[in-house]
Image (cartoon, rainbow, N blue to C red; front, top):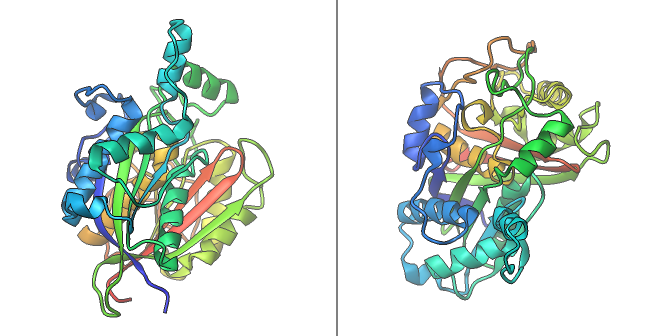
Length: 364
């Protein structure tokens, strides 16, 4: 029988705080992103993206109660998802005409994390798939566990690319909202997103018995959408395929990609509605409250879904006041109390990278 991957620990740092619990409490209050001060950490000399990744990882490891010796084992994998890695440092060195440090690509983040946490002998991979990077990293880790290539994995999605170069690029693409409007996922008056920075981490382990309790990865799926560099196929077939593959028809919660762009939100919502079951799943996007953290966003969604399972609640879509109408889904502007035993996460990246993961609780 294929081994299931159980989630043993979670960690999160974002614009709304520096721990998963702190951020969860903030999200239930319905904040709208105004700035990134809540993501502030004391600099330790590493790049910003690595610092965020290490911070989130330490919280997840502490919750999982993994000793440092477990991280050093050859059966423990380290999988990182990041869209741009330490690119701000590379840009800074170029603009200030300094001798650039040796360039090892986005894999530099996994090197920094491994060195800081003692991940010395196990498999180490870095996934760069635009805004699906983090979720694709989790899928790869789950594949390794199920294949028996490792017994546990530390998976991190991390992003810090707030450089004016990228702000200008997203603005030219027409996907940024005015700050005074903010990100409004699935809203009739949406304009786009605000970029942000964050890191999310999970510790997963192979199950040890058939009746094991906890939250586990139920299904995963990958897909591609060749329709347009920055937009989805208008039929939504890629998203529909993902949702069918992760068996989302029975899900209580679907954590959408939901970036509030003019073209993609209606396509994603229509695909969700078309594949939804009779119990009207709750649709949530964290991007109004946390901003769009690009490569980290899918892993943030996973961490928040774990918390939804644990607390029996879903935060409000805090900046969505005129939701696009669809009878088969719920887009709530207030917190919802609901038992969550099955949830799904969607991630979509520019260039057509798509991913989905579903979670289940207990022995279901």
